[in-house]
Length: 89
Image (tube, rainbow, N blue to C red; front, side, top):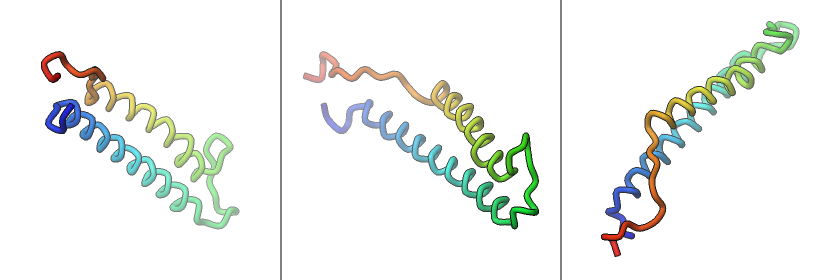
């Protein structure tokens, strides 16, 4: 197997998409957790009995990421064989 193999290009692209998703998840979590959570606890607002910062960063963030990863995997990821093709040997 050589570096010009199309599978390497696809794997690299998919790895970069994965890194992008991780960065997006961290920014989402950090913005809500420290943006809304930096207030005095007596000033917190609540969603479903949870502090808003926790709900938006952890609960809603998890749901958004599950939906986003599912869409990205179905639309942009490719099923590749791990074995060398017969002509590459």
